[in-house]
Amino acid sequence: TQPKERKKERHEAHKYCSRDRQEVTETKRHDKMPKYVLAEYVWIDAQCGLRSKTKVIHGKDSVKLDDLPDWNFDGSSTGQAGGNDSEVIMVPVALFHDPFRGGNHVLVLTDCYNPKGDVIPTNTRAPAKKVFDQKTEEEPWFGIEQEYTLFKDGVPLGWPTSSARSFGGPTTQMGFPGPQGPYYCSAGADVAFGRDIVEDHLIKCLDAGITVSGINAEVMPGQWEYQVGPCTGIDSGDHMWMSRYILNRVCEAHDVTVSLDPKPVPGDWNGAGCHTNFSTKSMREKDGAFESIIVPAVERLAKKHAEHIAVYGTGNEERLTGKHETASFEKFSYGVADRGASVRIPNQTKIDGKGYFEDRRPA
Image (cartoon, rainbow, N blue to C red; front, side, top):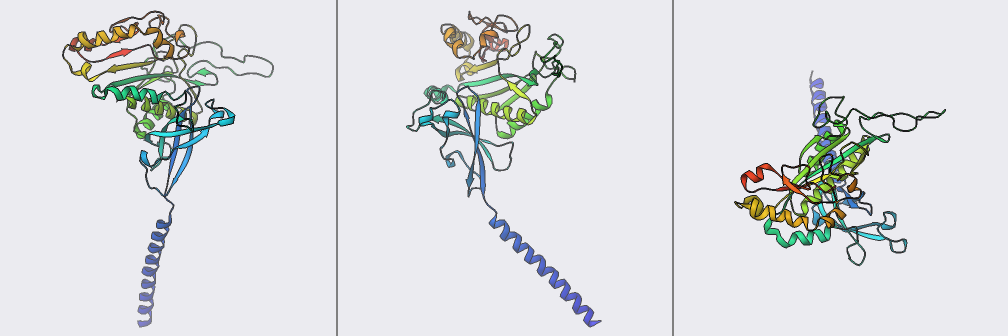
């Protein structure tokens, strides 16, 4: 039996040695694994669309905003530079987790400059930040309600569709869904269209670190809304633009198109706005702010109504008709709890004597 025992001992020793060698090999292999972070640089193009491209950051397990270098893109292909001097410089300004790649990878919002360091016309963030930096003690809060419409095969989700036939027609959408009424905040396959996309977008925004506070189905079938905020100052715009980028990517994965058009379907259908809730620290905290601060601030908005409408969205006059929960773009108005006004002041703000107001004009 002795030879058998020695053979068993040698086998056990070989087994443990093999395991030790495997662990050492795996440790060495792990040490040799490449370190990198994928950084998706995102920017706003000449048509207010969103573009992006990927930069591989080698030798890093993670990155902070300060670790990210400036980069560039061909501005002649995005309407942001001429072909004879096409380089546009991207400067990282905000960092988010990448909810698509996961891990240590990031989404990077960037500002755009020409090679001389001048702000290019489509970079409206830079001048906005200068304004926000003037009164940081007021801690301006924004809560933005982004409405949007989901399209598939040229019509909103939930609308009747038709297919082209070789022997002719129909080649366009025929018919309409039932009238508005049952779709707002609805549940059910006959009234809520695209919820899987909406839920996917919500979770990815939260995973990215974006301050999203809610979602809901909107009045027109195929139309939805999500809310970003409250965010302070320039963070509001950063979070909103990155949430739009994520929405584009989610819809791309679902083979659906998203539209932010203020009036995506003509006729007796609600448009899609971007209602903006606003307050300063004094509006929120000072007793009597409703009469002494909020109402005077709203009345000052009236003096620049035409100037505001000019930058509140292309085609917005098609939405702001005085119908479908809007005020006419031609005249400024405000009221308490009035969703047919340019600016709505919530009931609770009047009751408490402080709070916020909602500008319902932007799209």
